[in-house]
Length: 117
Image (tube, rainbow, N blue to C red; front, side, top):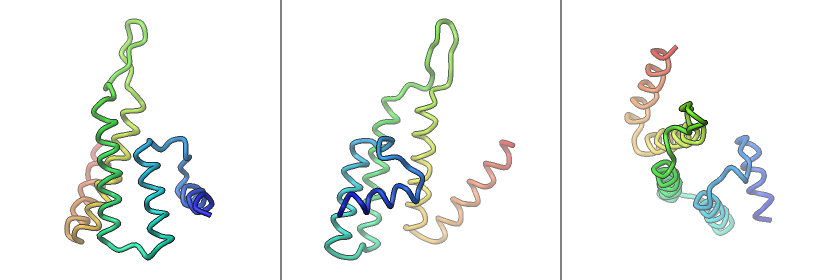
């Protein structure tokens, strides 16, 4: 039963199970376990997001900024992907912490995106 819930959650988000790190997989299973036992509280959501954020931070620290192919320096796509995931967790955390922080984060994100275009 737990696997069908996990598959459904990942499918809705467009994420593949193989894309998740070991820590994210463990956290996902903990979330499903909590769901099976009782309803999720805001504190539990904060805890899950904190753990997911920490897992991405650990991976990001160990990932080089650039890959070298012969004499060329190429952006490391994995690092870019990890930064995007970390930013998503930071935004989720901001939404849960306070509405004001969430509003500031979204406005800053939108403003940052506009200046880059």
